[in-house]
Picture 1 (cartoon, protein in one colour):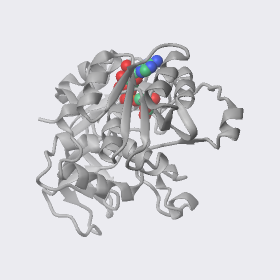
Picture 2: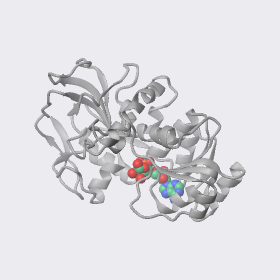
Picture 3: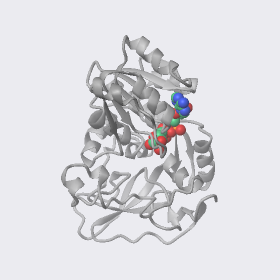
Picture 4: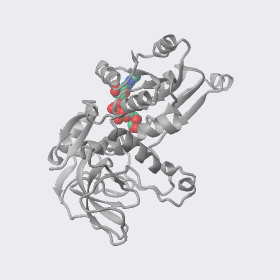
Length: 341
Ligand code: APR
């Protein structure tokens, strides 16, 4: 099969012919229709974040496709069926999986990190993790459900606990933040989008934001949000991964408010802990999603409550994958995907 192989940081992915993956008795072989390009890949390629499996490795963890082959123990799928491969496979047995927190599974396996992923014509996946997709959904565009939609879904529903009428601010309207906007708006919240890029704010308004604020350095952004809402928002999401915007997001909260950190950041942020204590504030992290989140999420997309196609800005072939990664590097577009021939 053809695949884009990662041989190590600071070099382009090598598009070449490699052996087809072999599947175990409990696995399926998925013929990849599309795979989303994600910042996580750039962490490995540009920023020396090590992959769990040493290269050579096929990256890519946002896959939709069809079932091409099934292991002998697999039941419940049929050949040619449309499927979504989740961004993380959980063990189902550890303490966290047993608590229903599979997204922090002690033995999690991520395609494109621990095992070969989806920048390839074929990929192997455990049948227990793979989800059926309704035929009514566009198969190619559905790949972004696996991460770009599922991560915000967990952030909004489980960690942010957004309810109708809540006032919400979303800091950062990139691939992740825009979906926080559309899912929070679909949940009935009044959503304020914050970004430094006017085109991102425009996209956020199209996806349901009721107001937008152009992000600035210092205290003015939070002040404007407090002014707009007469005291601050109930829930603020930080979907950038930047200490100053984590601090701004906390400062934009009303009493009793909740900060949800979705952006990845390895540096410390400074939080006013006296406000945290006196006003009973909360700060929570949010990572990926749970297996049980996928079915309602897929249903929301199938009903048209959530949109896919406005989020996809560039479609590249596997041969053009390094160009697609360049779009991502330079912040061009919203979500870029690799479409197999
Ligand atoms: N204030 C407001 N918006 C900002 C600022 C700022 N100071 N700095 C950057 N932004 C905006 C960018 O303009 C962009 O629209 O944040 C957005 C970030 O979006 P992307 O680069 O597309 O990143 P995304 O894929 O959405 O990921 C965001 O979530 O899962 C994590 O690792 C991921 O940390 C990353 C974060």
